Length: 62
Image (cartoon, rainbow, N blue to C red; front, side, top):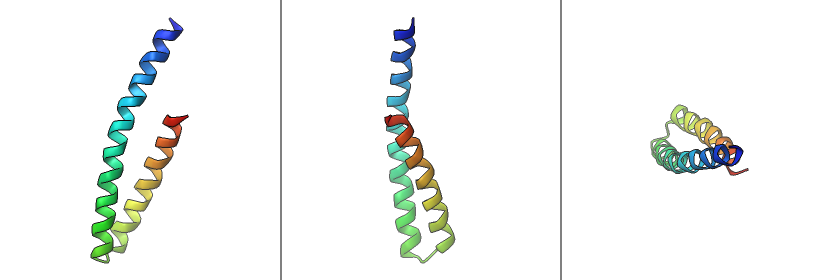
């Protein structure tokens, strides 16, 4: 039973990583746009979101 639970958790983590990569790509694109238009507030929001996504990625990788 323990192995079944581990397998399910691993598959959930793999799926989340895929979504996480798309979210990071989106945030990077949004950050690029904010930097191009000198929108400092949006750039700060993107950086905070990227830090949160990075932390989640690290947690999932371990």
